[in-house]
Image (cartoon, rainbow, N blue to C red; front, side, top):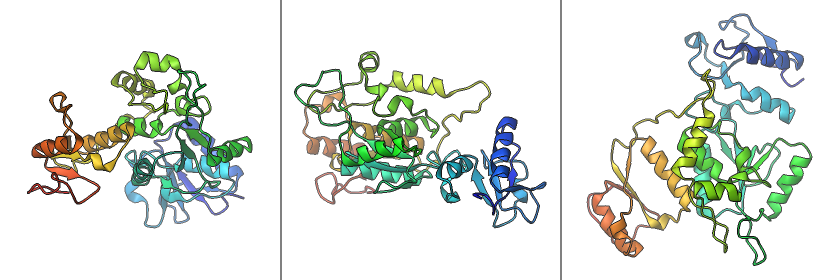
Length: 328
């Protein structure tokens, strides 16, 4: 049985209905519940927060794991690694195992780094343990309707769709979900609006109401505007407080002014996500001003770097890089 080696304790911070659900699933699949958090037989504490009653009493070697670990084990039919199921709310992508298709190499770097840094795992191949497949829109043809965003058309995307038909618990969605989850500071952002083949966030009503810009040549979607992010944020809140709201990150940057070089080559969505992460970690992002719109990228960067404490760039070259007294 799946949980035959598990001797568990359910943290009291879990809602009573969730405790009953977990206990039923665990007991029916071979696990045994202990009476006390100090029981020497205890192997797993299952919780939705790292700050549970008796946390200081947990002996060394006992695994503290998020409650969605149980759900994923059942979906996969075997024990899953507990290391990526952290109950720490700062680990936004706890339990996420992700891959991508049809996305630029630069954006893949951002997605992979963000997912792994915030509690998840990244795969280059499509494996059965994948939970999220990030897929960019397909290439538009001349016959496409201006309001229609083409579905992805890569072999990996079609393999993922086939896996869904085989009842593999796998979501195929736009990378915009990652961007909005990071900006809002929650990994529990609902995925339905972002999921293929009906990614409703790209449908004409959304583009009309929120200002999303789709160009006919690439069907590229620009940033999610502030009004849309505010709407998403309001949908996440519930009266009982069960849905976590954004929490401030550690003050890593210490109010330093950070300039992201154009040489990094980020898409608009990834750029905004990285800027949001910097701001949440105590930094101040140096942005292009309207008065600088006529400058080329190299001239613009050379001007902006005068305002910055930190320059983040891909290459050790260019006028901005050789400015003195900067961190890179």
